[in-house]
Image (tube, rainbow, N blue to C red; front, top):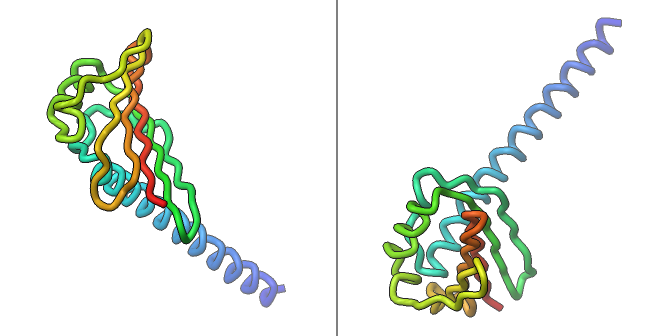
Length: 130
């Protein structure tokens, strides 16, 4: 009986360590995706009150794509867009409440865009290389 409790305890400890390592890797991936997306689209750090609602990574050994969505107050988004080298000198395409910034990619990327939904105060960033 005691032997089986020790086995369960060891097994539980191993599962806990694995779970913690997965969480740490995901947090590192998250920070790296944000850093790379900001570099590839030539963007400043996100607004202080930005709430990142999604981060996606896609691709293979021959391509990589990152997509990030965040919300923030309109005033902060506007300041961020004007402070970011990638968007500051661009006149966006406007369609309803959607502003699309076709950004000149940097850092080896082949594509970069920033889409600002003014009705939702939501920013969508998409960058990739292939």
